[in-house]
Length: 221
Length: 297
Image 1: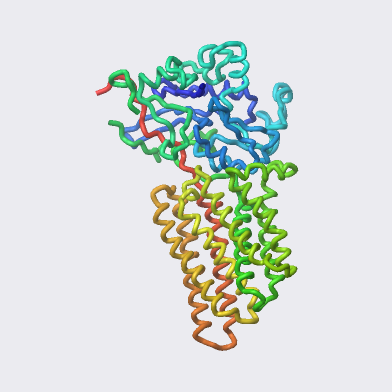
Image 2: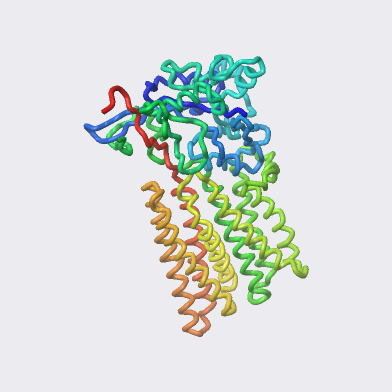
């Protein structure tokens, strides 16, 4: 089996937002819609203040709350763990948006453009099927499927890898198959301590955050 | 050992990002507005009215009128929420996933509730009981809808389920008393109404305690405001009015009961509106571990 997952090394991220820009370029999302977002988190009180940049987006959960609540079956989960939305089935009820603990879903009611009126590229890539329905990160599923069909390895070959991962200037983001013990993500998780966001909710996110090296080369959390 | 981080209140956001709420601090959901809240308000009220109308039989206000009024309230709630969906022309897709979705189950229940209630109003034997069961199932589905919204701590607390059901029943009982403002309702129904009102008050207290740890401060403050209304205007006042009516034994009894109904129904509606619109905070983003950079030790 295959279980696609993403790993973000919080020690590496510098908050450059290149992944956000790459995602918006690859997926032509409108202003305000960021399927890959990088949080700028400041913690503590002066003088003991720390700062971290945290990439977030759809966590492609093992047990996605958005999947269960969707009344139309527009939200689906593939065997490889990727959660998708069928824009032709979605009625835009936004139930999935309130069910998602990761604020990963967006609903845009009308076309919006960066400079008020549509630029040439925005006109060219306009997709009205994505209006008034739920949208979110797809792990660039089309790239993955096309790449796998050509015998490429997602997470290794750029042509088969999500745009955000390809664009990351610090190699914060990694993508790969969790079920493959030799994959890059499996190796990273073995060698580093990690957590998943809101894990107590039992959603089983497919997005891991590395925060420290494992003491003995084997991560325990 | 990493400390559990907390957000700084001292940092000012860049003006360009001032409207961007994304961060560790929870923020109010914007996906569902008053139109969605109206579905929970009128759906619960209408369902409760159908339940109480069937239980009342033909006593007081005519049963068909009460049943149709209850159905109208449910229909108005569904109409309101239909105005909120992005693609109303494919609204029928809402029926596609009753296997896991409480919204789809609510839709199917409503589909069955309409003919059952109409048949009951027309006097078809046996349909009044069916309408009662379906009305109860409808309000149960609505409560489960909120419970399944894992992104909102105030909604996913399990005690919200009995609280919302009891709110619907109290509102429905209140509507029945309002409809009978000129003629006193039977003692058993008034006792049932009072029991629902008191149970709702107790469930609110239990829910508030259980939900406390997970609530954002602003969500807790909004809920507490609504809770005070629920306890004073929605529990204490109706109970006193009903008790006063029972003790007075004069012609003002129906009016006192109707006032109790108004208080119970209005407080319930305000609570549900607050729950959806002002207490619907998410939990923000958590960072249970802070990245360890450089040398450790």
